[in-house]
Image (cartoon, rainbow, N blue to C red; front, side, top):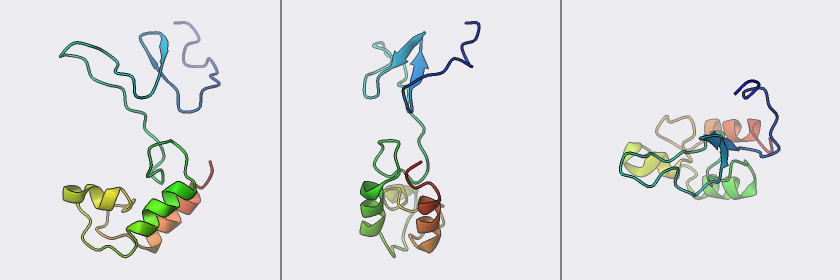
Length: 101
């Protein structure tokens, strides 16, 4: 594993599991004790593709001005990016700061 952490990868958002590049959507194990690897994307990514783009903006727009965001509704389908209970300009500003990165 020498140089493992400094080795460059061409796969954006790639994750390594047991020495192999893990493919999103593929379970990391097959027994009851295995857990799946979940890629952690930017907070502004609402669609789960690890990219903040127009699709994410459309998701935010669909929840715009919601004021009942909580863990019971997944913070308005993740559109409440800053988790303050509402979808507003603060969430839009956070999304814009991560736009197309």
